[in-house]
Structure formats: structure tokens, C-alpha cells
Length: 149
Image 1: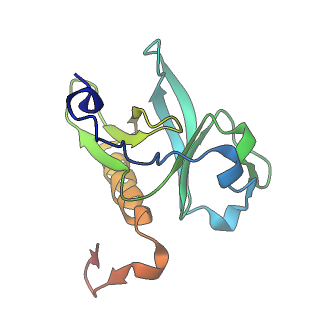
Image 2: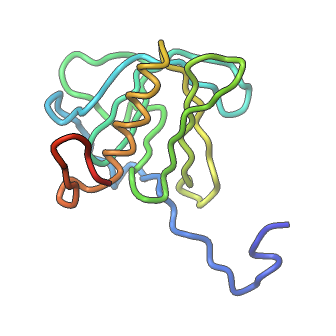
């Protein structure tokens, strides 16, 4: 049962996926924290497709092709606004190098994005960078050895 059916006073959390008007229209190359090719599992058919994964201070986006110059976010196949509601974790399954990003879409529905990196090191790098980017730059604190989240 849905929580709203069990508890009528339940109000679902606000969505963490951005709608186009909240996402910048363009992302300059210098705004990109990390980018690279990954395989992404499609939402309905469970087919795996190659996508360019792009991480900024505020968003995680996927694209079908790499642009010449800046990224136009209207061409993104996924736009996820990063925040404390976004979860990312490595997956240990038969399929190697997987990680998953969990979030709520614009309608407030739970979504899971399954991604496959080229290696375990690349997967772990993505998980670390996405977790780091979820925390606004103004509140990130670093120690000499490791960031403190």
C-alpha cells in the first residue's frame, strides 16, 4: 500500500528532479565537474544504451551525443537536480561496474537510474563525485586527507 493510503496526513516530499525551466539552458564546459560515457538501462524496456553522463554542481544529466562546445540541456535525456534526496550507490550484481541513482521525478514518483561504468574504478569515481556534488559548494568542508560531507 502507498503511504498516503495508510496515513491520509502524509504529504510526499517535494520532487528532486528539475523541470526544464529550473535547469540552466546551457552548460559551459568549465561548469562540468565530470563527464564520461556510460551504459544506461532504459526505463521501460530494460535495454542498455550508451549515454554521455555529465555532472555539474547542481545537476546530473545524460545525453545521446557529445556536443560541440556547450551542452544544451533541452537535448538531455535525463535531468536530475542534485540534493539531499538523491541517493547514489554501487551495485554488486552479475553485471559488472553498475551503480544506481535514486531520486523523485517531477511528479514526485520514485525513479532509479541504473548505469554501468567502464570499470570498478570509474564506477567508484562517479559514486564519489555525485555524492560530493549533492552538497552545495558553499557548505563543503575539506580536510587534508579526505572531504568531510
